[in-house]
Amino acid sequence: MVPTDAKLIENVFETEKLEKGSTRDGFGKGVVEAGEKDERVVVLCADLAESTRAEWFQKRFPKRYIELGVAEQNLATVASGLAAYGKIPFITSYAAFSPGRNNEQIRTTISLNNVPVKICGMHAGVSVGPDGATHQQLEDIALMRVQPNMTVICPADVEEGRKATIAAAAYPHPVYLRFSRANTPIFTTTETPFEIGKAYEVWRDENPQAAIIATGALLYNALCAARELSEAGTPTVVLNLHTIKPLDIEKILSLAQECGAIVTVEEHQIAGGMGSAVTEVLSANLPTPIEFIGVHDQFGQSGEPDELIEHYRMGVSHIKKAVSKVISRK
Amino acid sequence: MAHISEKKACELQVKANEIRQTIVEMLIAAGSGHTAGPLGMADIFTAFYFHILNHKPEEPLWEERDRLILSNGHITPVRYAAMAHAGYFSIDEAKTLRKFGSRMQGHPERERLPAVETTSGPLGSGLGQAAGIALGARMDAKKFRVYCLLSDAEHQAGNLWESAMFAGVNKLSNLTAVIDRNNIQINGMTEDVMPLEPLADKYRAFNWHVIEVDGHNIEAFVDAVEEAKAIYEKPTVIIAHTIPGKGIASIEFDFHWHGKPPKKEEGRDFIKELRTLGGNITCSDKE
Image (cartoon, rainbow over all chains, first blue to last red; front, side, top):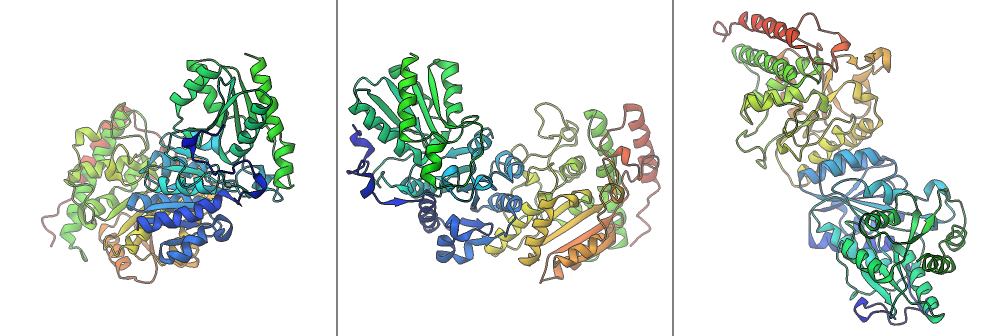
């Protein structure tokens, strides 16, 4: 069952009927709202105005839009200076380039400086599709979550992307926001809770045997898997772990205690990603069998988003198998 | 601020000599750190902290202060020494350089010592930060100026040229960059390791106003900073030709002194040499 306090859309499982959108659209909407609330908000762009949705802000606030050209290192350092001065800069590019290319500039001039720059990495994951491996960032969670002072958020749909962007603007420290390109179901609503660092359940059966912890748009796959598992007699819980850092340790440990088995789901390398973060907490506090859905030490390739998700074993059927496997290991 | 008198320049020279002595004392106490760059930039830092900057040492984060961004963070001993002499903190604290728990980190950190404006050390990133501050200030019609001190060898880094291009196209005339053109880097002479010349032409091509000065002639340096203020349509870069290790004859121009401190005995001799130099300066006969 979908818990009522998750306030998901009513027809959440009528996948074909659900409105779809790219989580980057949530950024585009959210940053305009943040800009309306706070005139210190500025958006920096590295020649990707349309595809990062930075142009939505540019149209509304042309004087607070700053073009850097194809220069991601400078994107980070100029933003650092703007933030040190007193602005709230959102830096936009593909995640492959920011935080991919400019990692050291982010480390030194944003994280160590502890200035409130918001790094918005678009086109994360293999679901970028036809662009291929160069543009399919699968290591960004690992890069960002190891930096002190950095918060890492990966929204599950357009609406959560909007809320995360607004929350990031109000948060006085560095934040990494991870967005994807593919059109995925919009299944949370304006009523769905969002608070940085606070995970919440989107599915709960009675006496769950496993907890599925998911981040990003794959949360919808996790939800569908849970429903099918439930119908087949395997009760689970699904947690929306939108904030990968700081981790909601209390919630993760309580689910591990209750279920005794965990499956993590993310569109990212298994090494260093959200699943690794969860494992660090479990191993130190409450060792629990865990299975990982994610990319197994490979680069992506060209293809359609859905076929790539299937090829890299992140589909609904793979999540179901992982749940069965982890339960068998209890 | 305008052209300075010969007497004022002389007094600043005396102050720079005191700052050099403090740098050597700091390095002896630290047992590690960089010698050549800090000594080479002592005159320019003296000019900034004792004449050019509009600042309040007793209120380091005063909103209207001029911002001094040090991109090549490894020469931070000269900044700490100049700040201590200017009253930001005690000279004793400056001598805690590189020690556990000290605000005087080996490379400057804004979180520990906010008056340094930015955290720096990894080269090539300071000009972008300075440009960001300058742009933010211009958006809000702030009057303060932004100064960015750069090493010469960090011009081998791509990030720096991205920032130079950005500042040029945005006509950030409230930004003045100062290059410590001392010609040395860790592996040798810059022109042997990875040549930078023609450096001035490169900046001109990036739409900057370029001034070249003797970085040890405080009068000329102050004039260059004044000229930069009068250039409204572009940012200005002052290429300051300096002598690494300036003041200690035996180490001047020697790239081996880029990244090591003097040993205790050696350092004492350095201080003696600087004291003798300082004793030979008389300002009372100047106007």
